[in-house]
Image (cartoon, rainbow, N blue to C red):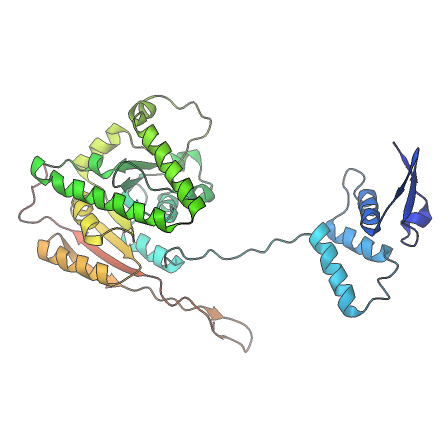
Length: 360
């Protein structure tokens, strides 16, 4: 059904009544905008948002009679409708983990190409993604966890990794990575119980909707863990490779024999010494490790225990410090509002103790 629109009706002075073939419709000012918008966007290329806004202003009969404040208000209203703008913001810190802290973690852990990095990432995958990006599609990053449910790594999807990089991101439980004698199996069970208790407390502290989503995700993971071995052995039918797949048995066997080249722990919800004493022995000798925590005291206690057990040397506690500057002509000065703390880091190098079994 075509419309008969006169030039007078499109000029802005008479846009209240447009006669269509077979009917008569009473239009308001918004309908007049839509008619003009359809006229401007007709054709193969159409008009940009700014051109549409300028055409609407030129088509308005009362725009010149408005005050400067009203004209600006009218322009902003039309820009929101026809020329929306996107505001880009800098990434924010997660659990006090700033970008300088993350960079220092990768440096202290000596994450380089062809490395096998063991990661405990409870920060939604930001550490796992940073390590995978540093590896550049070589080596492996193994995200380990306590219990039966892997920690979520949702932020890894935002990195837009290639399939070659995604297949280098794997996960394996702590029980699979460390073969424990019968006498020390109780410590693993106690650690897993503590991990599950902390996760349950965090779930209860969330909002009801978030808690329901987290519980449903855990149930789905628990149901899929029974067939994880068969799924890992069978060929993938999906077109793209998903990051965070189950580690194959060959890779786990290689890690048990040779050890990992570096270790990064970012688990503020877990006991630092409890997880460190289980993961540090998984490293090869002279391999570096770094532990992140938002508070200083848990890292100080862990450092003291590592010294007593003679598990590491070169232990160092670090507090990253960052100051942002505004750089403008004759107006260069530090920003008035900055992050007060970026967390704390405990770094060291693994050694063999007198009571530890010698490698084969």
